[in-house]
Image (cartoon, rainbow over all chains, first blue to last red; front, side, top):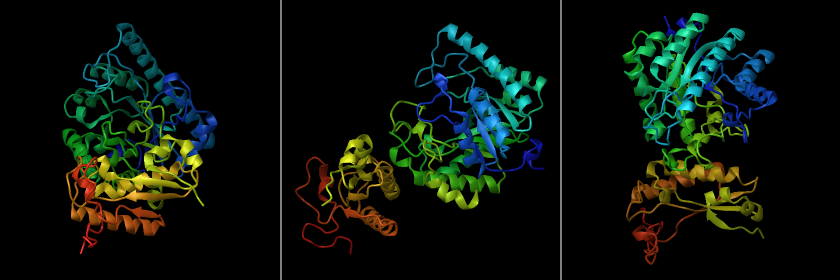
Length: 311
Length: 137
């Protein structure tokens, strides 16, 4: 039996979506409009069947309302954007918070999990899974959350809804640190980024396969999906060599990734739909801002030309 | 007569007024000086062109310089060499022809006087040597 059957879904094209355009940002709660989100989803619904979204804010409301309103054929993985519940001295860009902040974050995280349960109920026909967080346990994270807390989120969700539950994390913590969490989850979601680990393009897919296999071998009885993999098209040299970030490399990697994941029926969310200028440092060449397969103006990058024929 | 100004591709991203003022956009593209390994250099050069095109407001973009040195010291991961240089030349020309991109290849002749600021690679960018003999036969 294919592992996807256990989740009640079939294989399809999957992509991460976050619709913040120039001047918009979740940090100051400036959200895209309903019209803008609708415009994005209509572009995406042409080729993609699964979307992953990152928080339970107004942004999620807009996405879910738009899918229902336009009767789009899109199924959603809804994530919680959990905030730091502890300091992380190992975060290279700093993750020390006043105690009052950490307390407030814990309360906000609890509220967000509640909201996730509400949305999963309200949009049961659209939301095919929920995730209790994103990259909140990896060594370098700026929003570290104790594993026991994530387990408590999962248990709380499972008491109230039957939607499959996961947690989205870099491949490294899954082998060991997250074993107790994995026991509670319906499936495992991992992230793989060869380009952040200085891999050249011709060894990139092989690297991703290695990341994936390391987790699958650790959990032979659990479904494992990829909730982030992609290639940035610009870099200022911080963390990624400028020459390794380009539209050609993005197109090459994405094509290989989609071929491989399709052949092996591994649900794989491409990261990501549109460039997001609010991310990372203010430098316009900041790699974080350029992972989209479309620019922030919704113009297709080279990769879309390459993928056109077989998405 | 079209009037333009020549500079590195990224300066046209930084200064939109420069694009406004020029009739055509003349960009210099040197993966070598950004430590790019030779095998990825043509792809990176094409990315430079794509980036300039994205900010050119529909104006024509011409590559006014691009090339690879055949001798001299490595610059980071960018390694000079005869094979690297001729591969770069051939790939660049093939792409330019296919896409209809106009390029000025750098350079025609080796220039032995150019060994100051650019270190010892400065002298070895030519397709011909300083005596006018083709280097790649």
